[in-house]
Figure 1 (spheres, rainbow, N blue to C red):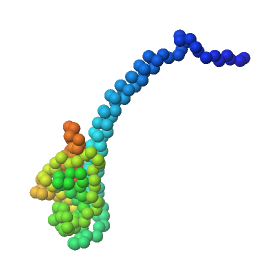
Figure 2 (figure 1 turned 90 degrees about the vertical axis):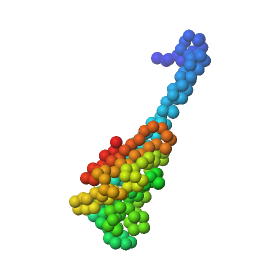
Figure 3 (figure 1 turned 180 degrees about the vertical axis):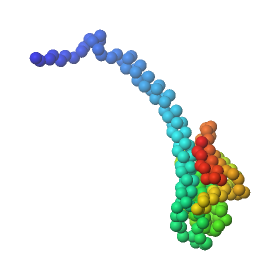
Figure 4 (figure 1 turned 90 degrees about the horizontal axis):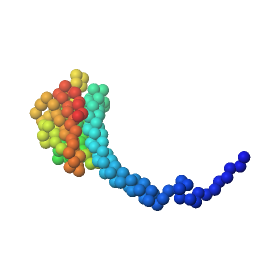
Length: 182
């Protein structure tokens, strides 16, 4: 049985008018203009959340390096543990270091830099407590956790978006070694 295919030529036979096409295109343009700016804002918020999670993971990494007594060759002295150093004067990066001089704080010329970690684009440190810089050092085998300067019961690293939009994330490390990412 052969089928007859014919072109639809009458307006009422299922074709679209120019007005209908313009309305559909207009709706698509409107939806795109509403969704696109919010998508970029959401992406920046996710960058802040990802960076906070990464900071927490890097603190855990310093803790794990210390607990397994990871070998490191120090230029001066011998390694006693690992730590992480945050300084608001370098708000876009922080340092994972090997504690080589037994002061339980980061000393730029004496401790070994394992890695300088750059934060995700669009995110920076707003503040650290204690201020303006904090060293968190893990000494095995117990582990002993040193937070310097001073010896507070916890350190806080507050992260923010660089674009000035409200929203912060806080990473808290206690002197008992508990790491909390809010």
